[in-house]
Image (cartoon, rainbow, N blue to C red):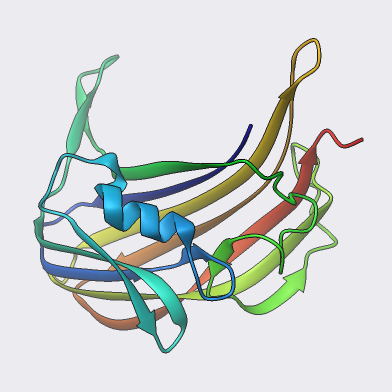
Length: 204
């Protein structure tokens, strides 16, 4: 069993209107089967106020997300009944019949793009253990109207994994994440930081 999992989490404490986002997307050779599945199936989300498209930008192929209005979401914390902000979560899984190269995904698998200033991090010790860690910069475009004190956070996560059964389930994987913090109204590109972890799990 091999699959790619891609998730986007968006949290806002203020109303956003006329929203357009271009987000890093799992891409290889300027194509994205993950992106094509999102456009076709709308992240399997029944909220059709969200519109998705693949767009060729000056930074390569990216995922476009549009909505006329995004309101803050709140959830009640059970232990003290306190209202806390809750993210809008978009996730999808794409299964493949081919084994994913989780040890060396760069150049061989879909990874979040764009990537700039990619460097290997030799000082950090991850948990769970990984073969290699890479730091990089990426780009995100945001346009929306909101109050000057609005705070928006966006998290993007990609996980590629293989699983097999030998007296129990065994796995190996690579994964990466990008976290973005924005304040006030937006109309342009933002440089964001990401990390890629490769070679996690069991290998023979």
